[in-house]
Image (cartoon, rainbow, N blue to C red; front, side):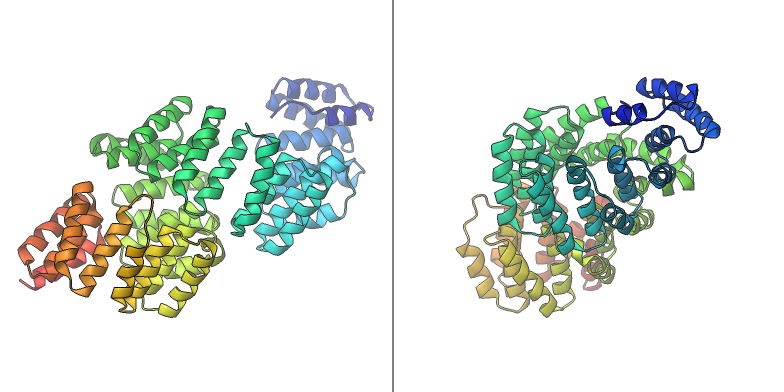
Length: 514
């Protein structure tokens, strides 16, 4: 991060040092002493505010200090004074991307003539700027230009694949991945991208396999470690996830995301005391931060909101996650968590409003798309639900989650026999709980409570502590007028999940009938 690039040294050699301060600044910067370099550069610029080598190095120093706007200004000043943009333009536009100056990036890059290798790198930034401006179609052109200039560049090809994944153009993404595998079969980042490709299509077993390959190739990469830990968690491989999370915490003991995930895993393993202790520690440390510190790093709001959610404080969780989503509307995890909070509160209208407001992002993700589909079904907006389902079926043919969604749609339209026939005609490689539960719910709506009850018992054998399975069993008892049995089940759920809106509603219904 702090090494002086050869290009900067060449730049410096092209100018006469105006003072010994610049020499001292260079020495300090090479030794990673950023504060000392900053002081020497201030002195050099006070002596001569048009000292181009000092201005360029000051721009880099300010970026290293996290002062992006000030660093960008130094680079702009250097450009105005005639500095060679090839020496620093990539760092400049990357910083501009971080502070949200998207159109300015595009305008600046179009005004400059750059060296081939520098232009290739900046074209990737330009594409990201278009995406941030929600001009996805225009974002492709810079990537294709970069590919024409550097057809075998790993970063360029990876960016193209990522673009096609986000646009759900999976056949094109697959072509790019095949090329990447040939160019660099042992590159861990490529295998991480392959995992994203499979995950975006709901093929989680293949995604896990790719992530494990990536981790084998580079067991120290923090991005891969976190992705693998989350994938283990999503696939309920709690022992593997916890082992990896403990490794992450050993390397970065104050990582709030890793500690939050550990708390989730401990909760799922019924190690509730330790899980709550971690959550309380996270909340305590976050409470010591000032509002300005929290506002300057919205990711802390995600951690705080998720911790509050796990502690049952839905009001605080909603407040924190709302702030986070407003600041980072393109973050799928934030949208998923906030929509889950609204769902638990029984605020389906808020879920619908949230997902519709961010529809472009939502429709890039299978799980969030299905969540919006189910909200439409629950709100009797069948036509909207059908539109989403048809688009998803075209993008994800033969996907089990889509088959389940189609059966839900048929059941909502009272076409129960067709729904059951669809489920029976599909033979998944591995029967999932959601597949079995959907079949049971349809039997219940058909009035075939005996079949539904058999499925509920089967599910509870697999997951005796699963509240969704318990709730299903309770609703069947309610339909059978076994009111005391239903009451006992719903009270049991609420004893461990007091904020479960569905169970509270069902309990009230059971009590009202007694």
